[in-house]
Image (cartoon, rainbow, N blue to C red; front, side):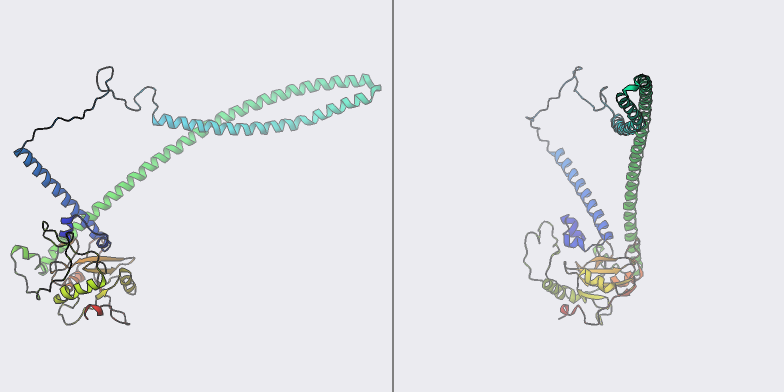
Length: 419
């Protein structure tokens, strides 16, 4: 299945949904390596063709004319190099200064109105006394001389009060302007400091996130390579690489008779003569999956224990991902089951972790079984389960198969596969 995906450079959404995060990382790395290899082969082929056959170049009818400057060279203008251009810092400073001036002006207007109200309150009583005195002068005409003296005194006092009021207003205005200028400078410095802190914090956060993502990708790639290397060595030590040694002339144990061919409609998408490999159907009905299991998997005793005496306790029929998680949720971390996928022709190993559930796609093509993205092939599902009961599936997750998850007491879910 992995070789077919690399040949087509395509994976269906249904198949991709069945992969775990580790298998997706491995598949991404393999597809990227295949792209680089194809590109190198294509470049080498083109160089070889160019060396054997040099075609005369056709004169291009299109042309580009560049605008020339005073020095008869190509005219180039770089933003920021002209004396009249402002830098980013200058533009930001101008905006901050404008905002500070507007805010300081508003505060000055409020302070000026407050001072005006205080002055009006202080001198209103004096004006009322003066008007009252004039009214008394008109009523009491008999006291003209005394009224005249009092009027002159009142006028003189009023003049002095007006001078004092003007002086107070002048001082108040100066104080308002001084406070406005001081506040303007303070607001400007505060806004500039906030902008610098925000820019610096944004750069630090971006750099930290970039480094963390890079370290995470490198760690996942390293863990994946270590898993492949470790599992290959373990398989060689325990003598479970019979499927791999076939390509090097090794002997393989006898298998059951070849299953009967299925009656499928073959199209150009299903079979490509140039590729020579059949693409696994990614979208299948329940009847199609049952027929596939009975015709191709049942002869290999798929789902049985290693001694083929009975069906394994960890084997389940065609159930969904949610149904598998519901079954595993009743057990402890380390519980697992192997189910027939409801989307593709294959199996899924569902595993319960401490805080989540993981699902690993099992490739069942070419008469062997292997986790997608791994290099170890097994002759049966029982051997695959037995191997990972002692070795974790991935070093990063430590998914070791501890306890199989059996059927519900109400009935088995694989009855339709064996009837």
